[in-house]
Every structure is written in structure tokens, then in C-alpha cells.
Image (tube, rainbow, N blue to C red; front, side):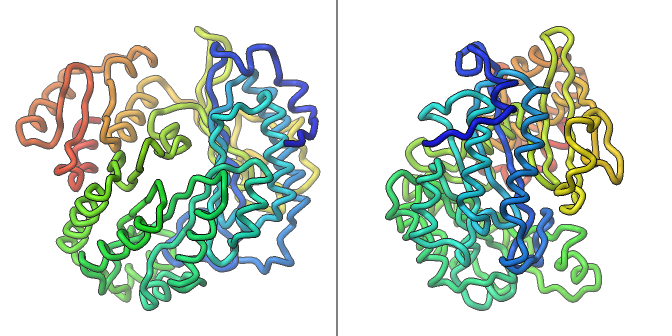
Length: 420
């Protein structure tokens, strides 16, 4: 792979960047543009004609941010890179590659085990795109199939049809060097549990090694949220959503998939490593318009952990002034490059690890996490809550490890709330 030298790489590279002693890091790059805003989507996405997307200018802006943030976090061992959106498959691959090369250069030459993922929509993905992405250094794609039913696809605001969704997955599977994941949404009005299973198995049997199956969630600030508030959104009953969740679990595990997280299934060790970094509380650097990041900086014993969000305004992000060189990364304010900034205490970080780690089938080693963060894992209220939940079969305790049994995942949100 050709590497394009950047000052970010010169500033951050050191002999430890690739060594085992360097702290690991994931990088998330947000591409905010899409062809059409889906009515259920609460991510930052801006419907824009392809000819109006500032492909090269945006790549240059991301590299400017990378240069500054790489200096801030110092030497790291790069584990994963994820391009999300929006629709990153709309981005010219030459520009996506330029950003990826900059990331590799900033944190040392990439090893063969760095997971590089790109979210793709069937409407902007085909065999040529798949090959371009592999040539650029991408080794994993996540394709938003969402449904195989024409009416449900229309309801969800998708631009592709069922045949297009399947063709995109098949094109990716035919491309050497790509791991392939697909996304499905179940729990849509008019869909039976049998429908959900049929769609999940149809996609699984194509040969994907990872599948995400999300229950439709109505979020505030979305088109669906506005319609639901007015009583104008058809919704599936909670009992049928629960039946669909259980039926999809049984169907995919019967095909050899591991149900390793509430909404995620993997075959043969192909878990989504980038998402695991979120769930396990690892550091991740967010780059791009509206991107979130959570990192710990500074020497051990005098470090600072914080969460930030970049400006959600593409014009502000693309502007050459103010520059990242002079931006205050420790202060969030409207009109600035950094919109939000929040120091994260050990207690807050521990609560977040519980909230996310308990979504995993493996659960969480509570005592190890508490040691890392310098907090007490077992205040009396938490011990009592765990005892109550264990007696009801809602939690499983194995020494220092807590996990929610699969058959209690439908109650995961309430269980986690009680423990926190």
C-alpha cells in the first residue's frame, strides 16, 4: 500500500507505536453525506446529491484534524478503523484512501491485523467499489440491507430494492480480502417473527460471517419520532418484537452464528472488533463532522479521560479558519470546531463500562474494570441489586464476572439500569 506522509505521522510516530507496550486505539471517521435521510436514522446525515459532496476538501479537513489529534494522543497501537455515516460508500475511494493512509502514517505502519471497516449502502456499492476499497486497504464492509420486503424497504426510506441488497452482499462476498457483514432491521409494523427469520436466514445463507439484527427503535429527532408523537406511525406490538428477537436468535445460532452481543451475530471468530472496542471501554479517536471520540491522554497517574464531539456543521468543519492548530480541544462551544467536551471521571467511566459491557454475551469482569478505573466495584446497593437480579435469573455472576443470560436479554435495559 502506498503511504502518503503527513506531519501527523511525523509527530506521532515513535518506536513504541507498533510495540506491545503502546496503548491501543481505534479510529472512527464520520462521513456525513448520504443520498437520502432515512426516517428512523438519528445519526448525523445530510441528504446531498453526489455532485455536491466536497470529496477532496473533506478528506483534507479530516487529515488536518488527524494531525492535531495524533499529536494530542501520542504513540498508540492502531487496532481498528471504521468509516461510518451518512454513507461512506459515496465517498470517492481515492479520498477515503488518502485519509486511511494518513491514519496509518500517524500511528505507525499498519499490521495485518488492523481491522478497517466501511459502512456501505447497496445504492452506492457494487463489485467495482468492493475492489477499489480492498485496493485502498479496507478489509471489512458492513452493508445496510435492512429488509428484503419491498413495502418494508419503502417504509424505512431505503433507496434500494431487495434484489439490490442481495446483489451488494454477493458482490462483496466475491471480492477477495473482504470480510462481509450485513445489517437487518426487524420489528417493523406488518412483519411477523416468521418474516424476520426468513430474511435473516436468506442473508446469512449467502455466506456472510457477521450479521447485525436491530429491532426498530423510534428515536426523538427523527422523522419516525415526529410521526410517533402525533400517533401517525404504525408500530409492531412489543410482544411480536420480543418473539422476533427470540426467533432470529434461534435461527441464526442454529446456522452456527454466535450471538455475542444483543444485536450482533458472528461466525468463526468474526466479531466486529471496532464495536467491541466501544463495548469494552477502549479509547477511540473520532474524526470528521459530528464525530464523537473518547480518549485518555497524559502520563499514567496524571492522565485525563474525556469525551468530545466535533462541530455538526460541515461548512464550519471544512473552513480553513479557525484551524485545528489553534483549536482548544478541552472546551466545547457552539461555533467552535469542538462542539462538546466532557471530562470523564472514573465513576462515570465504570458506569459506562457496565452499561456497554453487559450487552455482551461474555459480560464484564467487574473487578478488573474497577481496578483500571480506581473505583469500588461493589458498593452495598450494587451488591444487593445483583443478588436480587441473580435470584430472578436476570443476571449471571461467575466470580468477578457479570453477564446477562441470553434468555434475559429482552430485559437488558432494565437490568443494567438496576446495576448502575
